[in-house]
Image (cartoon, rainbow, N blue to C red; front, side):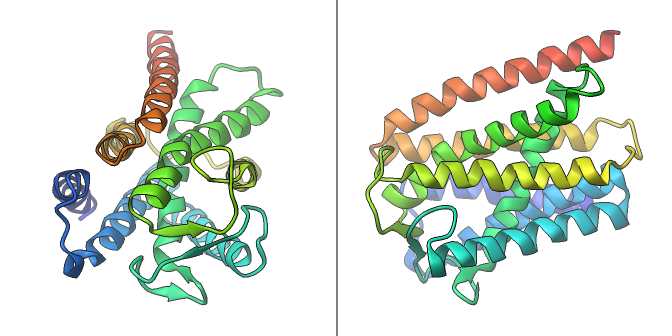
Length: 255
């Protein structure tokens, strides 16, 4: 079943790249965006379950979904953490004033950043590694947001910012908020500190690939949507994180 869900995501992803990048998505198919992000989040949840056991992975995934939706609700209602913004009506079912989709999007981002940060920081000393893991994981999450936010705002208008900002009219507070919230989720993991249940590379490989697939899709939309600068910046950052990831993984396997 888990592999079937992953294959469905890949199929939906290919359709999404074609329809979104070239602005072919008809209005009646807008619900497909929510299905895509929810499926991607479920894939990340399966990754956590495969790595750390069903009970622990499911609990951690639910914490990410519930906390992220609540914090995003505070952001929309009270301008908390991220700044002043609102979601449009085409982004799926809402809980209060926040789309349910957002919780799964955060789960996706945490799955990607978790896998990369775990490998990149694996040989750091026992005392320093938790701090390095949190910082690297948060920076990778912010890297993803550097393309997700401008595309979602400037090109697709999934949400609207009410105040000007330095980066494609997105305020600095948004990126600080992303760093802090993703740091909190990675801190949850450090406090939980589970043991890996398997040494198989199937789902870690899928999760690391997911990082590149999401970046590729949004960068392509950025190029076709007229915000190439964001895409170029994130491509360079993604190359850096992938370089670190595969280098550290090679060192680990070879040792």
